[in-house]
Length: 256
Image 1 (tube, helix red, strand yellow):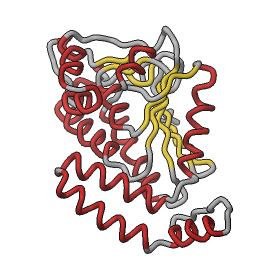
Image 2 (image 1 turned 90 degrees about the vertical axis):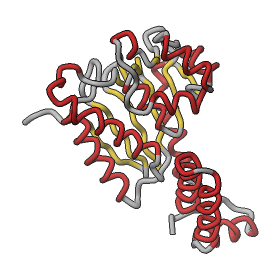
Image 3 (image 1 turned 180 degrees about the vertical axis):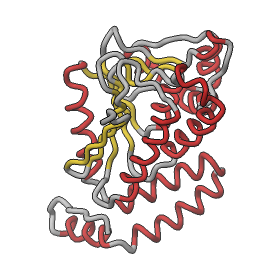
Image 4 (image 1 turned 120 degrees about the horizontal axis):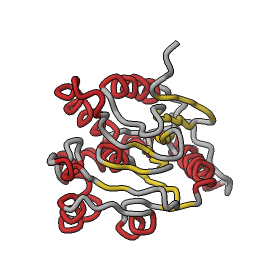
């Protein structure tokens, strides 16, 4: 039996998808299609409240496009941009556990995640290095890196193919936390568990409003925010939240 291209584990309301193409965890068309299927499973599972993306092995989170699959490049390029945008607009929190290098499409994927936690290792660097090959970032990097660090810093990184280590990535705001490599998955899982305890209906409404504002402008974002406020306010989770507050206890949200 062929080895799975991406591994999916669902436990305690957290879905972990591990890119299973070590050492580089590069993206072929088949790997992208497999990820698409697994994201669909996660998206439709009401029990899943947070998602972790990480790479297998110790070398790479992901090195981006698989040059060995160049025959499918005409399809893989648009597919990669489409998939990364889907993750950017995901309505469940997505955390990138950067276990190693994230270059090119690998960093572009991490930029789509709501949170990024990186192993504090000299063996881990991130960067959009495509210009070294005479090409440009094509899976959203020109837009999303600028969104995170501003135009001047993004241009500096892209035009010179700069690679940042963990401390530099943290200072630039590209990652939200750095932790010792041996503690990475424990820290990410603990963070995901805290997210899973939050009210799923309200969390989804917040994510939807924010991404709508990014993609469609602030006026449309505010409209979606108003709609989300009504939806969350009418939920059983809201009733539970107010009841727990009055009873001075921790709320137990059920996503209803």
